[in-house]
Image (cartoon, rainbow, N blue to C red; front, side, top):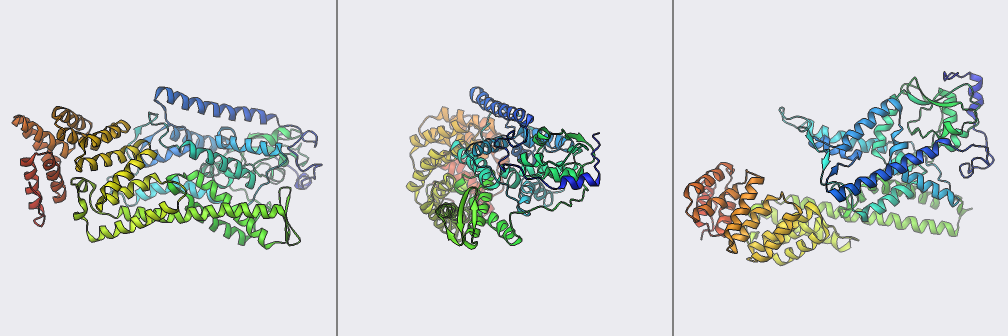
Length: 631
């Protein structure tokens, strides 16, 4: 009878896990008295199918240039921050709702990272290494903390300081279909080490579900939803407490103990892979609905891999490693940083134990015996110190990158005013000069000692060089940055390079850079404005007007473009049209002296002196201390 009820006598009988003939039970289960899992092949089929469908999704986008947005839970961040409804948000919402009913099955049957971990675990077993579970009291909360940071914290930050009439979530917009499918994904050069670290290394050091247990933020939400789900692995009176279920569980769940004590599996790490159900010799386990795990007092005492002191050291090590590598060189994404940090934490704790204990083993390797380090111990220590050393080096680089970025963001001189003239240095305040000097120092330190080029830092450093009069160096750096970048980053580097070339009188070269920028981002109206200016200076005035009109169509609220068109139409005697454009420019121009002065400079650069003087006059009225450089 499948009622989940068990007698006290049967509970006691099941509580102790019998010793199996061979501890490597999953190597050859039938030989050790454990029958093969019938669900394993179906789960493998589901996970392989998932990866095939993901590959087809990418191919379809690559061929057609347009497809359904990535079906990734992380895409939900864009929905919460910008109101952009995408396929990832819909999938994550449905997955959580399903978990609230059926329990945490999405992880076990529909996650490509778990598929990778299973593959790595299978390969390790093929060479005789069975991944050993790592158990921590505190580190297990990392996924939930990260999930809060990713999905809850941004909404709270917007909610409390927001104006009363502003919604917490932006107006909903449809982003289910996209042309920028790969925009939120890392490059292949980053994806390969990510898969190796979050797949192989986490399995090798932390157990078959190492990444799921200690790093995956989506699992943090799924584990909470699982607690209230009525769908659970449950037990009948046929259970004899043989322990086969626990022996095959790759999620580090004490199945035989939990079903004996609670009549069901209550551990939130259970991913409903159904292996335990398949291998039960009496078919005593089943998936069914009933009382959820919430409110169940867990009385089973678990054995942990760490002492409380080691737990605290582990948490501190994890935090240090995570913040050291996250976004270093603008390369390491959050999930990869989590994988690196948890591996670093394990290696740091194991290294500490290696140095302080008399005896220590790792898998089948004896690292230390009676206080003497063995050859395998020296190899482990060397590799561990190299890994931790690279972590520390990344932290050093990341510190200088962050300090440089902070100084860069503190520069108050508006980009538009700086780009309006060939020598913007005279506009720098003492505070700006100090911030630029500090920023350049940190940028150059990170560049000198870094292992990779930070393409974002390179473009920021180029801007600081331009502001301090080093125009040629700035142009070289922006050109180099554009070679490393793609998409929006490349478009902006090319735009700034084109604008600087234009101020330097190199209009042909400027035009090439600006056209490349527009090719990368056709909606970059700043590049269109600048392109029109370069064409005007080259005497190609009709083309310039056409480009400015195109820019105004893309964004009707462009005061500079409207001013350009006012001057251009006035030059060919179209007084009425010129007046309309001039009125539009006045309407769009903010009452800011520096902005008016910038407009005057840009108009003056292309010979529209009369119109430029009007803006200079307005700038002087708004701020009499300004001394416009009129021609």
